[in-house]
Length: 122
Image 1 (spheres, rainbow, N blue to C red):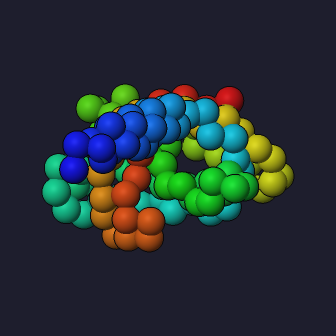
Image 2: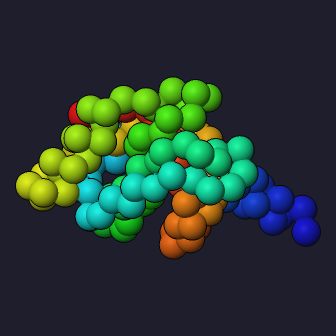
């Protein structure tokens, strides 16, 4: 049993290092679709949101909230939405930087079931 403790600790450290290194970006990818809506329930009720799905090659598909009129999100930046639309139309890559904050089920988007709030994109 004692022999396995160092292996377990090393495995956990490697996993946590990989997670923290990836969180926050940048993820280089292109927008494959955008779902725009006005939330109908919860704390976001009545606020406009834009939720794009981003294809990042080997990283698969990620979901971000890139535009939100909810004051606490600080994302009321129309240029984010326009950049995402341009990426989708032109099939061009952008760098996506996101926060650690996660949620689920925004505007009924359930696949993937979790989303990140985007902080910046270039």
